[in-house]
Every structure is written in C-alpha cells, then in structure tokens.
Length: 223
Image (cartoon, rainbow, N blue to C red; front, top):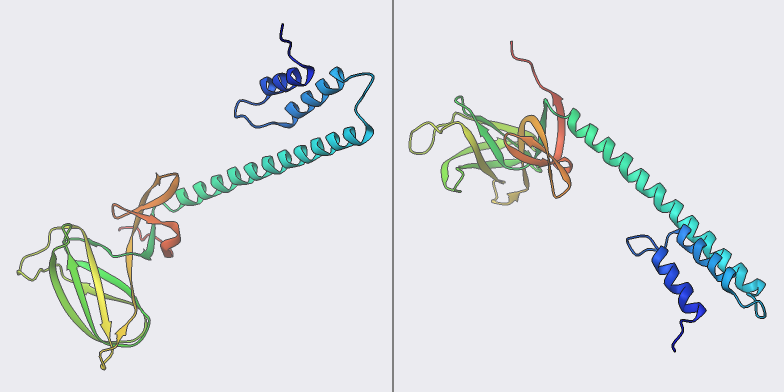
C-alpha cells in the first residue's frame, strides 16, 4: 500500500491553504511553517539555522506584502485625485494640441503655435470624410501663439454646415524653409469619458488626453 510522506502532506496542505490567486500570502507561509514544526521528526528536529532562515523568509514576505499594500493604497488615492480633477474640468474652456475645429454659423477661430517667424501660411479645412472644403493664405506672422478667423465659406461659395471639421496649417519663410507648427483645439469641456481605463475630457464631441492640454480658462457666461 502506498502512503503519502509527511513532506508531501505538508506541501499539499500548504497549497490548499494558499490564496485563490495562487500567490503565497504571509498567513499561508506562517501556516506552512507551523505545520513543518508540528510534523517534524523529534529525533531530527529543525536546526536553529533552518528555523532562523524560515523566520527571515517570513519577515521578508511580510515586508513585501506591506509594501504592496502601501503601493495599492497610493494608486487608489492617485486615481481618486485624478478623477476629482477631471470632473472639476467640466465647464472649463481648454486649449489643447489637436486639429479638430468646431464650426458655428459664424465660422470658426483656428488656433496654432508657430515655432518661428513665417512669411506665408496655408490653412486648409477638411470635412468628416477628409475632403478639403476650403483653403486660404495668411502672410507675415511672428512666432508664438496665433489664431486666424474663418467665416465658414467653402471654396464652392456655400456656407459650411455647423459641426466638427479638421484643419492643417503649413508655414514657410520667404526662402521656402518650413516653419514648425502645432495646431490647437479650443473648446468647452462637457464631460469625462474612460477609454481602456484612461480618462479623457470630452471637448466639442471629441476626446482629449489630459497630457495634450495647454491651458485652462473659466468659461465666459452668456448674458
């Protein structure tokens, strides 16, 4: 008849007492150590060195568990603070990197950052299919935060319907050297959405990453 050895029994009992995720918690380790002491051979007991080694392992495991608990607590606090911050952004006017353009019946204001003086600029407007509906030129702009107005008229001579469009800005010096440009979005934050566990601000119906925000202003109240 086959019998199960003491070591196998201890191992099996320890595995049964381990946490459901398969990781050995400090309580599991302590149970296993207690079982080892309970079932040890009285004629060949665990040496002081072995016992000290087991206790050292237990202390290390307890320290790691405490560190993990602290990290989890900090993560939860950080997520809570981020959520509160994002919610407080609702109702604020924000400027962010991007090329979305919200067009009203009066047209739109197109914002961008020039990283050098430009002699000529070409601004292009695209509809939701990517088709260019209008293009116009500007001249002699200095480096910095700049904006131009568009009355909403397309190249076909008709008024663009209110809605969300995209745009691009190309800038050059008089010698034909390209000037770096970052296009900017402007709009009112109307909500917060979570995609893949990451929070995004809803601005003009589009999702804006918090890291893309350049400035935040209190929205002006309508009279």
